[in-house]
Image (cartoon, rainbow, N blue to C red; front, top):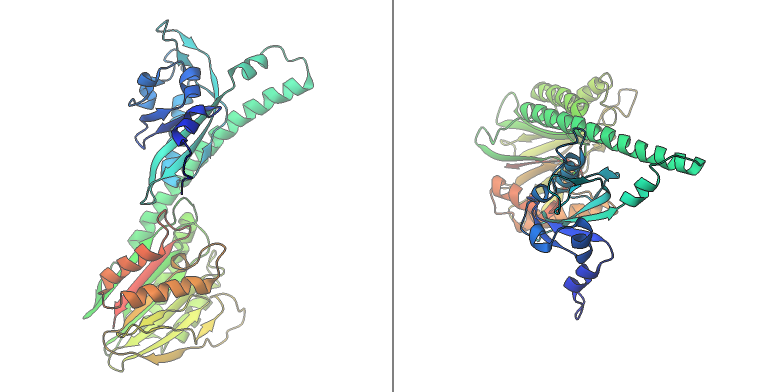
Length: 409
């Protein structure tokens, strides 16, 4: 909350440094007095105009990269919601008195997000420090070890920024491929026989560790029975997506014929020990028998499913929990438990991105989930899934993947 009596517009204008505010479309909204003075542009030439119309690259310099680098930084802030500090940039500025003449200039920019009420980036703060004189003073003959080191650091900073930009682009491409692969491998079933279900997957925001979460729904042989499962693979990118696909497929096949969920996870655990990248993977599976109105479940290091009764009672199914899939080198029978349910109840399985928050104990996240499920208990699976995600995921997005599956029993 702003302190009463403080003129923040005046503070902005008096700030001892070059600061401008941009829209997500990179149009100037405002600029402080120092920005106007040092940029050599009037307020009218800035406000309301597109950044790169005001400051284009020098067309006479084929190696000019200032505009490209600045655009990449600003779009990175928009995409990640995180501040981005750039290496020193050469970004020449055209003289207004002599059109066609360009002044060699060097800048040290920092770009930061301003979030709106919806949690999305509403504005960009563009702070710049001009270091032209510093660079020029070090650009002549190097007569001391200190000056040689300064010049070397400047060159290495530029090279490091270029390498980082190439890595970001490579990671972005890998992330897109991994998400596409995951989407192709995960089922989109919204109904198993006569039973309504909803599935949701939300990748992590502003991070590369995506594509390890998965879910599954399969019909079991004989009677009105289904299997509902979720799991989580440690890792990120294509590697995690490929391991996820292997484990999901193996559990899906095992669940169709296994005597119970413990046996299905035992088979999956044996398989995980020979799959590179499956170390410490977790999974929980539930066998639902609609004729007997029972749920048999078993967990391999995963968070407990939630059972939401029609009266709003929420129970976490946590009586059959075992270590992750490959934790034991010797075959050990996994535990399983059975619970009943009433018609109209809902079974909810999820991954840790839904409830875990840094610096907070897990019980707090589970309590939030139980409260949300109880308040929206009358909703059908699709509406319930949307309500839970809206209430539990941070507005700016979670830092871990989130998978959620809800089945009406």
